[in-house]
Length: 189
Image (cartoon, rainbow, N blue to C red; front, side, top):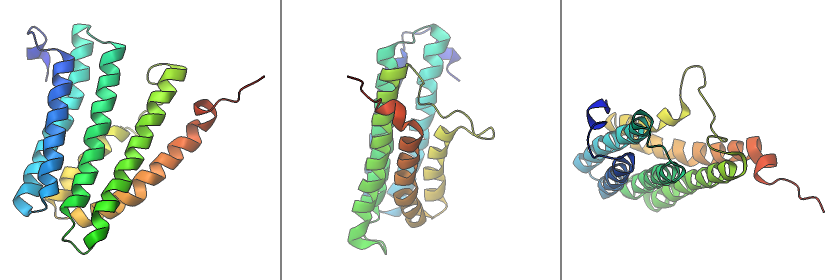
């Protein structure tokens, strides 16, 4: 997909910034809370996710991998994923969840932010990709983010928000439990 970009001046970090812009735009569109905007936001978010894959692929293909680029990518991913959940909550403020919708989105987003913090801490302690979960039965857990636009397009936004407010904190807890000894190594005096 990125092969045509390999011989251009386009850098992986530039793709990451475009990913960030599209992710924020998607969250804003979904946050409007009206059907056409919700669907437009879902489409923009798919583009954002594709760009997330493309930046790393371009970095590997061109030999432009760097610690700074990796951290930028992690932060952009987290910000986009946090904001899409917050936007979903804000967009559902007129739904059956009413005033609870926005806090539900914030809680789900905060859990994603916690996972990012733990990921960066693990990488600082143990090296790059130390907190990567790997494939589960051939499925990359990062690809689960594509459920968001799919469920929006299928009309399951409310169910998605409920699943996010339950599953994201649970995932953060499981992530913490899996890596807690490495995240907070005992200090010896």
